[in-house]
Image (cartoon, rainbow, N blue to C red):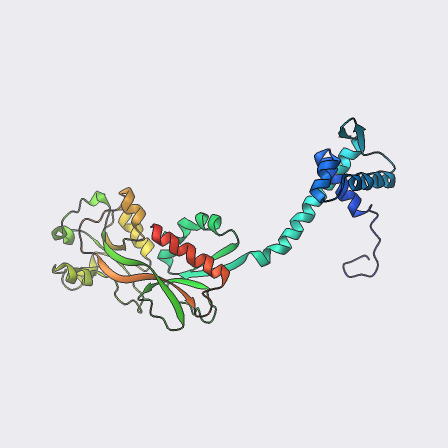
Length: 308
């Protein structure tokens, strides 16, 4: 058996690699001069290597015309095979080099921000940072960046997280949004419409919930269970947005994550006020902020936030 690692191996019956490389370059250019430039040798060296290959194979590979080269049928077959083989060799070497040049970075953020802000920009990220593989961790549970559960995060809050370096991306505000099909224009008409509720994590500093909105709007809320009895409730903000888009009621939604729907007119903000819930921040563990791949992701997200 001639298996990998076995001492028994039949030697390959191949001509010298230098001769094969010289021939392949000369055949590609149909010129010893240009082949010499590609391989950084002299034209006479290319001619010598090709002649040695022809002698080893026992047949001519080129027809040497006046100021021109032409492949013989045997030369054309050999060129086609060598070109395929060298392409495979080059691809294999590139794959070995790529891990050192391409690095994976795990970005953690909540499910709504991942779906509504990050995913639509993934093509732009790949073009801007071709050497970085961005892995998206979407969860409403905070990960421990210091323990390496993710490399970088976008979080909502005040940016005061011990052990982390943070940078404010953009303020976040929530407002009543609904489909224009509802025809809602005045806050006084809000009790006539179904309220769409969305769960907030316990650690949220200033959650955008309907009782808070009614207080800041100075409007008496529906009494008791009437606040929720005729409404819809979701654990995920994206689902609340879909319900609002379908005309099922009025939801308190992020003005940042609903920007595209507001621009297109699919959703409208019939009135205020908008609730301040803090800001979105970039965060990374202390000591990792200057790692090249993390820095590339950091700067790209910051630039996208500024543009938005």
